[in-house]
Amino acid sequence: MTTELLLFLFNSVINLIATALMLRFMLQWVRAPFSNPLGQLLRTLTDWLVRPLRRVATGSRGDLALLLVVWLLLTLKVWISGLLTIPVYTPLALAMIGVFGLLKLWVQVLWVAIIAMALLSWVAPRNDIMPMLHLLCEPLLAPIRRLLPATGGIDLSPLVALLLGQALLTIVLPTLEHNLLRTLL
Image (cartoon, rainbow, N blue to C red; front, side, top):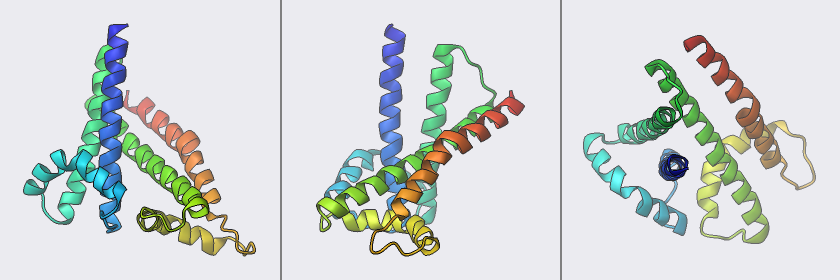
């Protein structure tokens, strides 16, 4: 029971840090302003790791180094969980699990951002976070909007994006991961 509790706490902390770093990476990638409450929270949660990283990798390499740290955290989480629960992975299998974890986290962050943007557009469309959410979600929603027929002023692109994201998270990525790991193990 103690091992399970420690593993739960460890996984929770790693997931929180990885999610905050992934969101920061994604927002930096779309050049979103960090002058709002969410941006300030992300800075507070991640500056302890991002500042030393920026000394080593500058410019766009710094953004990619941030993505590398997220991958390392997710891989470390799987490795330590495996040590405590018996599964033994090859280094290549561990690396691929980290890559799939990174892809899943990216989809999950976008999924939550789309839901937040849709809800805030109904409740508080002039919220300080809306421009940042718009910058984050628009590269995904704009192509979907162009493909959908006109619906009389109701934007269905978030619904389509959420369905696609759910299909990725529940069918496509797990199937690819399972098939790849089966060949590596």
